[in-house]
Image 1: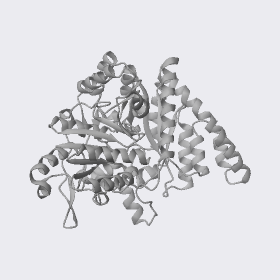
Image 2: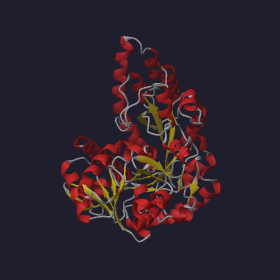
Image 3: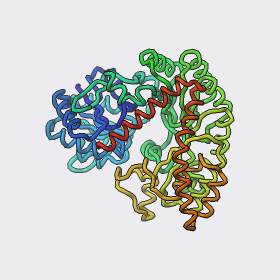
Image 4: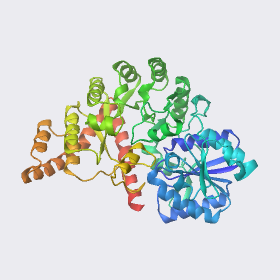
Amino acid sequence: MKVIFLSFQVNTDVIGVKYLDAVIRAEGHESHILLLPSEISRDVQAALDHVVLQNPDVLCFSAMTYEYRRARNFAQALRERLPDRLAVFGGIHATSDPESCLEVADVVVRGEGEETLVELLRVWEVDGRAGLGCIAGIAFKRDGQVIRTVARPFIEDLDRLPPLRHLPKSLYVAYRGEIRSVREPEIYKKYARYQGTFLSVVSSRGCPFSCHYCCHSVYRDLYGRTAIRRRKPELVLEEIEQEVREFGNILYVNFQDDCFMTHPLDWISAFCEGYAKRVGIPFIVRTTPAHVTREKLLLLKKAGLRWVFAGLQTGSDRINLEVYGRKVTAEQFLDAARIVADLGLSAWYDVILDNPYETECDHIETIEVLLRTPRPYQLDLFSLDFFPGSELRRRAIVDQIPVPEPGAKSNAQPEATMMNRYIRMSPTLPRSLVRRLVAIRGNSLGKALGIVAYALSLVMEPFVYLWMVHKSNDFRFGRTVRVFKAFYITAFNDLLLRKQG
């Protein structure tokens, strides 16, 4: 069968879709991926015309909650021109809210999609709609009622999946009213993440936590458990080697695992030994503070680890434990941050803002934890969203807390409150100054000084970041310039896309 995958992300880092494309190709199907990163009318029209011209048997839509509106609108327009094609929605939004997706789709794939999609294509080709009820892991409508079949088990053996390609030849982008291959230099530089200098890899699936705001709380409800599945170190290394050989401009290997540090020590030892000898490019991992150990980080650093991403989320243990269901205390976070700093690694920490369950005292606890965190470090600040299907959204509805419609807000744009600004300035300004500003925040002079201090912190942030990037590149000036160039060109392109959309 002929399949087209449609993604609405702003870059080519669509790991899940790449896996699906590779899996069905291995099964003998014809497939390619079409990326539609903007809402510019000429690009949308070009994408519609392209799909119609290709005349596929199956249309597969992948969309996060923030992209669902665009995916729905595109699907509606496409189905007017190809009304008899099988339309399938997948991804975390489809998993958590299949009802909304079934307004425009025939079938929703829930959970991990590789095995489900392979079976769906096989059954549809033979039995059509009549065979849907026997397929595990999907939702569809029958006589106007939504039918959810039994959940398909996790894929336990990830090594059965084809190797992930950084930029598969089957990947195309709608750009300036044309459909262009991502292998073209102009498209490669614009849409390959950070101009293609970041190679994203997955060495495991799953997370040890199922935080109430996170997609893993949805997966826990679907599967009845959480599960970490690991690939063999040798297969991960072979995949990286192949991509580095083909794309000589890769500056970082970016591990997208939810928690890389859940790998046991023997796995990390085998990986590090091979990585140092065969790859040697600086790499990035994500983890939870609860899984950071000095022994593991030391091995990883010797192999090339330079950046560690981890979540604080809030300095309030009450919020973390009781509201977020996150089993990490502030002291555990600080212990992990001290290890990261002691080993000279660059750190990026997440904080969630705009939580209606937090009090001013909780905010001050967050500020205090950040002030105690070893510097330098970077903050990623997110505005709390109540995603469909998440435990936190269910709780907020019960507690009669207003929640926005899915996709109606951006979690990348926190509210412009002074408390959020105090949190943002905590990594850069003198600790005593931040504490003093918080203490006098209630009077007019304190508010005025807070605004001035916030402006100063915005000026200082790029210099702190530059220093951390320089350190992560072992103070090699040439590499640092290349990294900064890729970062800032990407940031400009993303901003331009948002304005045009």
